[in-house]
Length: 319
Ligand code: PMT
Image 1 (cartoon, rainbow, N blue to C red):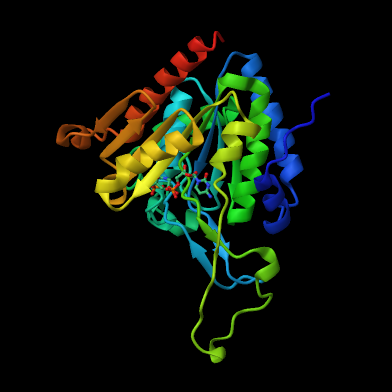
Image 2: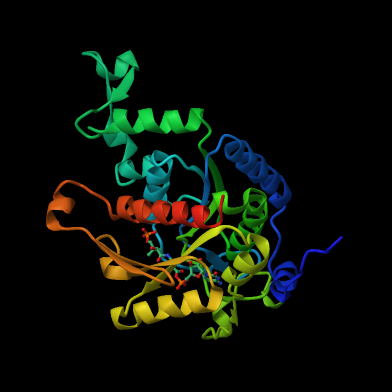
């Protein structure tokens, strides 16, 4: 029997990034989730969302963070479920969550009020509809997807957790071949301190200015596409702050990793403009002022574009 390939990245993952203790249990859950939905003819998308945290000390007081609110991932999850997909939502602890995201800026106590005249003495609390006008619609859809088990939420905080959980997810989803999609919207650190070089205790400022030397994080897209889930439809994201290098970087990523698509975006304009780049095509998705007025979200267009591309991908493979 052929033995699975062990890439050098697998070795590095095992030796330099602490393995979360629940990774096997989570992998089992993801495998069961994927096979349950695939058996019902439903496609499954793994969405990564939010930023990774890189600790500077083992007993962590300080850490480096990658910017991402998680809005892209959370809103995309909603549109994928509306399009008939089941979603594994691998997200940063406390980043934005589908449906709840719409109320993330509201202070819960401002959104509640006492019912009736006696106010506080009645003890009965109800939602203040003026503060949360859309809550019933969001609650209804949230409960529907929860009851139909259309979403499996998995949390990460550190880069190590992210990497190991992503690998576990890829292996779980490899069991359903081309029915799996990877939508890698998380903002992942390119730098880290290996576990063996990390100080245990809080770094002391009394020792003077801090100089950090960080190692390069292995590009996880490479084993994901080649070894862990070779039949899946894989989309990475490319974030830049300099628009002039964006498309070139997106094309280079496709050439290097040989996956299916890159969603390219610039930090300042990411809510209204992205380019979906594939080996053969380049589609600009733009929200007009009218769209913005009507609260259209760009994620609806991204998901529509990518679910059609996934259809074609499966058809070409004869699936
Ligand atoms: O969450 P929001 O506030 O809504 O913002 C959304 C977003 C801007 C974070 C999102 O649209 C986005 O662009 N996410 C990707 C950001 C990013 O980390 O880009 P990158 O150039 O560092 O990485 C490119 C790709 O390589 C990513 O898909 C990442 O999953 C992958 N990667 C990164 C590092 C690494 N070691 N291995 C990888 O495979």
